[in-house]
Length: 362
Ligand code: NAD
Ligand code: MN
Image 1 (cartoon, rainbow, N blue to C red):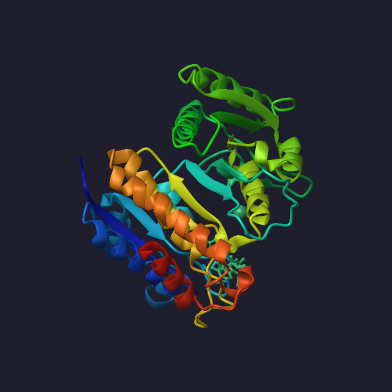
Image 2: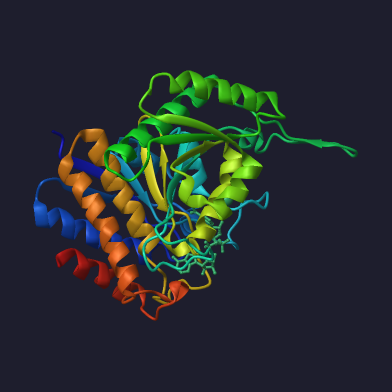
């Protein structure tokens, strides 16, 4: 059983280093306690501040470290005022996604007891589903390739068999994992617009083909517009949702809204060879340097990393610690002590992280 892992760490910009420091501290506390696995952290330069100092957003050496690592932790990158000459922002997090073929954007939408949500949740129901956003093609294939004339503009949506097969296989496997750990019911819903577009009928055909290899998992279909409605009206019915890039982009923000905002929304970008874990939020320049950033989305992303490494390497210690870490965040939310301002508390970043460490030690 493999139990030594290289972790590439991108601290990034703005609040990035402030939320990465306690996350690495917590991971170190976990590995020290059990001594059942070791995580070796290598810090990598990249981001808007690095660009303003050196003219490089993602140095080749950092990309190389990421490529060689077993997993990548990233906080957030980009600063609104630091831009390339063409006016677009420095965003190595998107370059990494493309360079490393991270086709599955995994966005868990989870409501811990006591967590703020704009919804009224009926007795006995809870929100706990995972949205999988294809992250390398779909409408984003067109990025930088759109055609504009005086009278017309067009962008092209591309869905390939190769990526769709990987995407659905990944989704069904995740549903199996969730079913066996009791987190999910074993249902995958293909979210598309197959009633109108041939490309989505193709997407759905590949979904059906892949489903055949997973007879223990139920397959369902939903149109993307209805999915937006149901995410508000009955989100407790969902287990694993899988969708195209642009649809997933929009639905994931709706998902973060259900969780009461970005401060508790983790994510993972996963490919066949590499995986990157980062919070859904950005570098929050408005609060950077003040010590008030919420570290929980980063910490929850690192818990996803432990679980992913555990599954990939059949390492039960990592699986257990990933679960423990998620539960520790859940308990702190429920007890309402150690919460930062964005989620209704008064704690600073350090106090919030201490609350997690204390919960893990109890
Ligand atoms: P943002 O997520 O950084 O901030 C939006 C709002 O949420 C702000 O008011 C911010 O203070 C608050 N917020 C975000 N994270 C928080 C946290 N952990 N604790 C407390 N409050 C938090 O989005 P933005 O302002 O649109 O973008 C800022 C910069 O981040 C931009 O340069 C953008 O390009 C970049 N960005 C990067 C990523 C990424 O690295 N994946 C994602 C989104 C935005
Ligand atoms: Mn988005």
